[in-house]
Length: 66
Image (cartoon, one colour):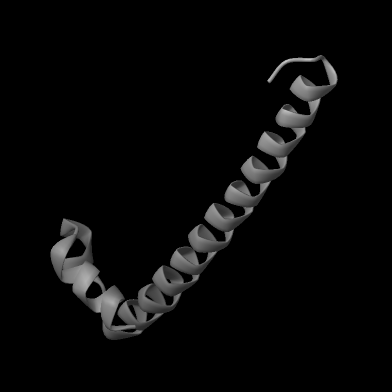
């Protein structure tokens, strides 16, 4: 949660000056959710890449390439 507050001060958009306290609280929740989803997506992409690389190696070996 502290990361979000630090990010908000660093990357403070002009429109954020005009949010009320309720909207600010909602933005914090949304930023945390977005960050979590980005981490999940990055993990999924990394796992897919591992599987792809293993399959490519098997494909090359089956064709007699190294």
